[in-house]
Image 1 (tube, rainbow, N blue to C red):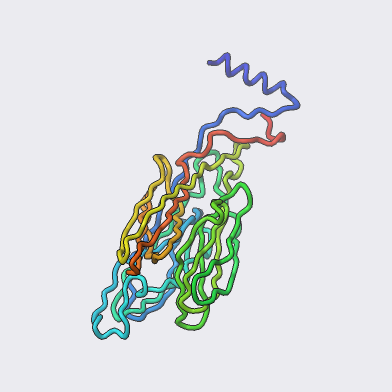
Image 2: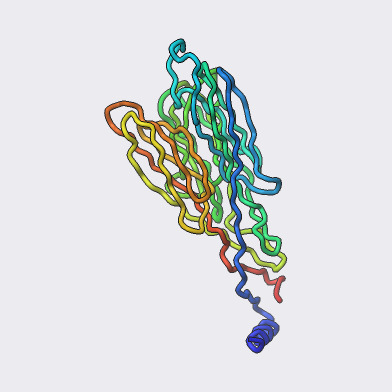
Length: 314
């Protein structure tokens, strides 16, 4: 073994016009989530911020409407369910670490909501290499009543779109709901929003771009994240509220969830390691809805090779 090491050193020393790239160990990628259980009183609106640990990077922000505790449903001006009971006005990555959620409880009782952000450790664990989020990209559009699509937010090559977000603005009390948050044209480098506007609104959509290569480490090498986009399609029973679980493969973690619904409403998703559970509801129209669900998955280790610039020859 010593003889082989010595030979490698000699070859590198005399290759003056070349640079050597020895095999390197892969770095670990650590993902985790931060949760908050939230209760909104009758008619309450509010903004709430949830963040990853300092120095880490947020890749997704999700909500899940758990329950409505309407004290006097018979006295309500109109009946509410998990779809109409809570309006999500904003779910936007306001920094590299955190999301701001703005919600409105329409009912005469308390609403129970589960907020979660997905996080990646900024330090991938080897030679000081760091993950990189590029500056946030945004696009705005006016959406008339009915179905509409916000402009796609696209990232440059060698990156993937993460931390998708939105903000609705309009007349006080205006209502719109997200029915699609998914890669545009099948590319994980872009994301678009599909909107069901009960009232005319302006939507500002956003995303951040996660570079697929790390910063350069003390050994002069960059490492590459290994990502994959996993999808599945299912029918949503007519008039039913259902939960569907989608999973990344072994040794992968889900860092972002996507959905595209037809004849169905989105109630949120729960994060759990390499799995996401999506809750959707189909109105009673006489025909089932459909849901195309997706996960952006990252391997738990970077690619075990790198590149070194000529000035970093050894």
